[in-house]
Amino acid sequence: MKIRAAILEQSGLPAPYAQSRPLAIREVELAGPGQGEVLVRIVAAGLCHSDLSVIDGNRPRPLPMVLGHEAAGVVEALGAGVDDLAIGDHVVFVFVPSCGTCECCSDGRPALCIPGAAANGAGVLLAGGRRLSETGHDLNHHLGVSAFADHATVSRRSLVKVDKDLAFEHAALFGCAVLTGVGAVMNGAKVHPGDRVAVIGLGGVGMAALLGARAAGAERIVAVDISRAKLDIALSLGATDAFLATEDGAVESIRQATRGGVDHAIELAGSVAALQLGYQIAKRGGELTTGGLPAPTATLPIPAVNLVADEKTVRGSYLGSCVPARDIPRFVRLFHRGLLPVDKLLSKVMPLSEINTGFDLLRDGSLIRGVVLPEA
Image: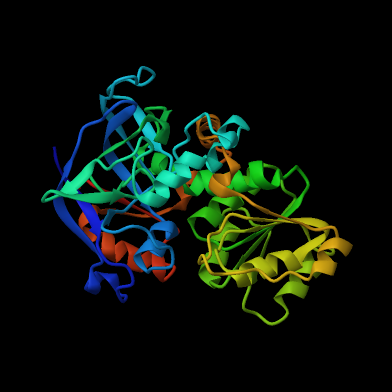
């Protein structure tokens, strides 16, 4: 079938993207679902820094590629062997397809699925191969999803069914921002009521983590960013304290305000400087959990003796250490109860034709989360 899709052919074009236009919207061919696959009409897709890092070249991916990995839509066709979804179901996309049988999946850690990671790195679907093409040439899939299009063929294991009363522009955010941010708090750090928590990096994922810390019952929620405007938003969402990371003495100020440091520092900026700050503001015996994705060449220098003497823990959290089939419905229930106001993360809704402008807004910090409507 013919679909409209946003194609990235070259990374590293100069900003502003509204002028260089790294994403070209063209008509391409989409093959129907094969064994274990599903055709979905995409209704809403979020703009995420993980997409931006491919556009600017910080996270290399095989090109040309149809970008987009955070989305929600409606099931339109089912491949052979898919018997637990029905046409018309509403679904959220998950950017790590899990095979269900590898060592990581068997250990209950589908975010670390080995075949899923290999497929994502190669730009193919979980079963192998590509379903997108243009003038006879294959196009790569982004994280098994390729959501910046009006339709997508994906593995059944890239989808989670959700309630039909959940607005699509909100549902889309559960596939990445909420899974990664709230999951880092609840599954990665395992924040308990009364804990002191710092969230470093207040993009869509960081703001979701802030909401997650509040829902988990954290006593102090310290927001840290390089943008005063984002700190103001964080305070409106429930942060108890806010600090500019660029201010002199920021680390000591945070440690004083939190009586020696936080129980959990959660880094979601994707930078070494943010990681270092997080490690420094964690109390003795505290923990640093990171869900940010810095450049592949970035390294984190840690004083080894301090790591031991202070008994600090440093852990990674990919996809929020989530089991998506369990956690997306759980987080949606918290949203419906008013405990996880994900709708407050949505800054702007725009048509697919404005996607390059949307990434300019994301790049300069104007958006917490923007959503494009492929059919608009």
